[in-house]
Length: 80
Image (tube, rainbow, N blue to C red; front, top):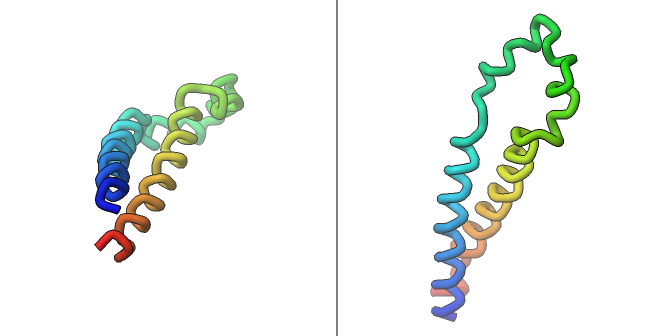
């Protein structure tokens, strides 16, 4: 069980670093203020899911779910 805990802890640390990096790579919400004047109707506004920003949002969700699952598993008292 100690080996499993060590492996999960290493994966958790890598996940923490990845989550930090993915969040920092995203644009701020203030960059989207052009939606007030209708700039969201452009090609990039309509295809946001296919852009790099859309990929970062999806990646953030995946890494965040993995973060919470690993945090819950490592907090179980099975490894004690």
